[in-house]
Length: 126
Image (cartoon, rainbow, N blue to C red; front, side, top):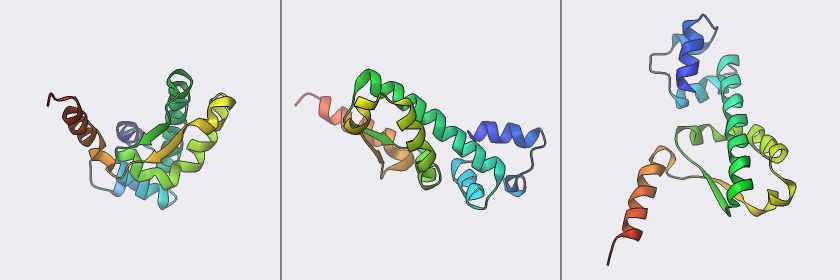
């Protein structure tokens, strides 16, 4: 997402992010979206749609009881939640909709490292 925003800015797109110091991060994109920047808001909405479509496919295939939103995008959750949930309802088979909880990680961008450490502890010989 950050790379795409940078490409859009380089090609002349109008955005308040143009006035921000680089690098463009999900946090800066979220801030710009909160300031009603059309480029940032559109990019976040597009990311929400793509994430929901990917999760809908995973739900149909794996049927997990919980899906965790983490990483830099989790900081944008309040901005994208409605779009994400709407697209997820549209793309997920109806019989699966109530079977999976979607939650936002408290670990944000550290979720992968924490999960890997916990998995290592769980799988290590005693």
